[in-house]
Image (cartoon, rainbow, N blue to C red):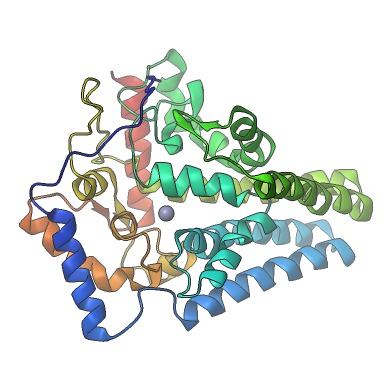
Length: 360
Ligand SMILES: [Zn+2]
């Protein structure tokens, strides 16, 4: 992994690509006379997912069913954690869930229900990943440590030649790792990679520890008391593997596939090679955009190009604005990277991992 001890800058825009994209997308919303934020269907989906999570959780603990029913229920619980993350927490923290600030806050705080910390997420995702996508040493999403090589500038090790086989295992551990390790690592070092954390006030410190205590009680202590140690362990691991893998693969399919770029910062000027919008288009890929089911489940994260260009627009509008983005890309001779199905995107991710593992 290369070390970047400075915060990169984007060069000034000469071709006004970002301005052109914004102008045309704004025109679409003006013509339609609609808000850029979430619609009633999104609020319904969010309520369904959160209610579903609470119902399955309570059912498992109070009327614990036999194992062959309990395990599929834990799989559903894991899927719902990922679903709440994609559809509620992610949109809320970007401020695109609703036109009302309090509703966005509430949606962003849904991260806390499933045990993650909204403060850390906001820094890691909104401020770092969304600005410096695929920049080695800065973007935390491609920093998996020595176990995986996720960018051409990272050091290749012998074991990496097998990473396209063992990545499944590591991705499955994301939830456990996030809740029990990386949150604390960020908290105690007060950094996310090269980035210092925003100063935490007393409320942020209380929230951090409050969420950790809540998680320990709701996800560990209470289930052990009610269902016993071994059933809890099996259930907790099942839920964690499903949520960890789903969260990891969806976010990775958007940036680490064949065709996406890994821009390198110019060390003397601290500048990235492309302006913001071109940077986002070159480092991001869409997948399965024709599938309404995939779009519904992953909260529009399959329209990741549109999301990176317009994070404050709710994902419910991405299918409509994708044609505008596609046309602008064509005019500016930028490749609009897209995989038609989830399967093809996974193949492209596996091929990327294989290339990173075998060749310098
Ligand atoms: Zn985002």
